[in-house]
Amino acid sequence: MNKILQLFDEEYVLAMFRRKLLPLYPAFSKIEKIKIIPYKKLIWATTYHVVVGYHVYLSGGNQDSTKILVVCSAHSDEPRENVFEAMHYLWEHKLNQGDIDIPHPLFYSEYFRGTFYRGLHGENLLHYIKNKDYEEVKKLLRLAASLFAKLHQLPAGTAANFNPMNSRIKTVIPGADTILKEMSARYDGKFDKPLKKMYEYFISQEESFLARELNLSLIHGDAHTENLIKTGENRIGLIDFTDFCLGDFARDLGTFLQQLEYKVIVKNGDRQIAAELKDIFLTAYLDAAGLKLDADLERRIELYYNWTAIRTSAFLFLKHDSDPDKAELLFNQVKINLNIA
Image (cartoon, rainbow, N blue to C red; front, side):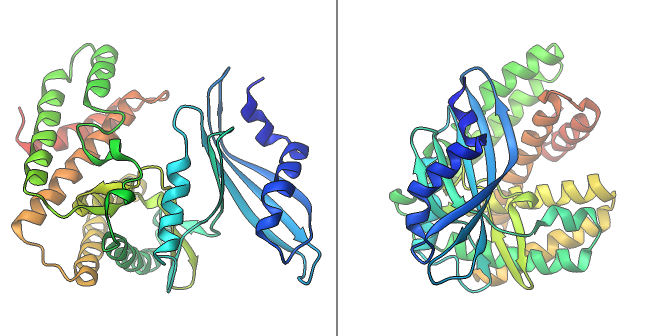
């Protein structure tokens, strides 16, 4: 039996939480019960990738009974200790203050290769995009811009590089070689030549920028609409710290702008509102960070915008229920952007 299945066994988890979780909440004397919520459950013979939520009911002591949400992110081949360390770093440097919420790290399990943390309550930004609640989207974008500006200004020494492989396009996983190989096999080499040119351009451009010894920032590395949560009125939360690393802050901007535009167009078909929302976010970020959009920063944002578009395109091409038509639209747009025949 795959050991990860124990995280879906109520009796096992309850016993584990009484040992490891309850001491972290000394105001309570017992855990009454738990409710298991499987968010992601990819389990094979010996490997796995799971995200599990637990409603934990605490009681006793001097406090009224209360329910908390605990989440575990675990991966057999990619230990999630870096996720625990990244969250701990953000708490240590007080990013979780004011109008920003960050999940609270609880403990790391080497046995499960998983991090346990207090989850955030609320709907993500994509939820409001799907519902065309653009007034709420605009509020959240301004909050997100301020959040990213504060994140990018945190101390960023080598100790803050929680995922070194993710710091460069040439080393990020899955990388160019993997994507080229899988695309070639699946589509009989149809996209090989332009895709190779794209990745050569992305890597050479990033290496050129970074060779100038830009001050690297702590970046989220996966700045998507699903990873920003409305946690309350005029409050925003950030989740998913797997890709946290040191990099060019323009990467978070380019990635987020591409994903924001893509989700608005795909879900609602509204290019005009997509352009308006992108402008709101970028303007708010520049104001919060005290920056101006000069030609150099614009080129760097465009680099990561196009790179993210190709990663999204490759995902659509290669996923189990692939969508080649939608993928090729994105692919061809990047060809136009980069002037690749």
